[in-house]
Image (cartoon, rainbow, N blue to C red; front, side):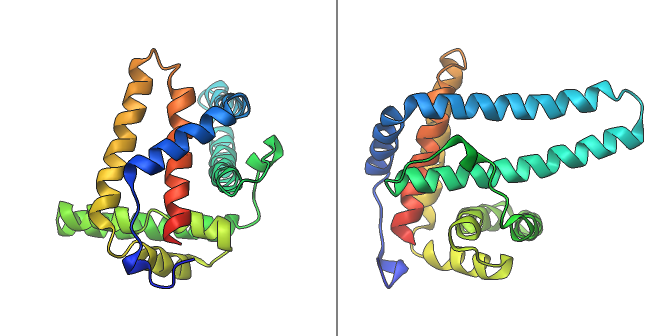
Length: 205
């Protein structure tokens, strides 16, 4: 593990290749995983629709959907980390909730920082988004508090801002290809980009 993250560099090509190979190796598991995510999200969305004009019921189901989305967000990161580390992931790993409070507070803090950055000018907002993209990873992986995770993400991405920025664009283009492939391609490109980005997190951290 590197002791000075400022000197750690990564190859976008190698990260994508790693993500592709790992996705191919676990393709069946990952496709079923994302089908579960779609079904769960769709279920809670449908509950909100069926409440009609009931503000109270809609609010309750909306809150439940928000909590479930937080849990699934953490679960996807949890599974990505396990696969990148060479461990066996299970479907139950998707419902990972232990650091939910820190995850929620960090999301609020990140949102506030991003808004400030974009209000200053677009470039600072982009830099904040790039440098803080691994906050949630650090909370799930290291169980850090929100402030500590923000500081750590800023530290491990030092010296890689623009490399990470263009890497993000590359991952976006890969998912665009998934959309163009009649959306079916997303079942490959979404996990591919997740695992590629997770592998970069592992290298930088």
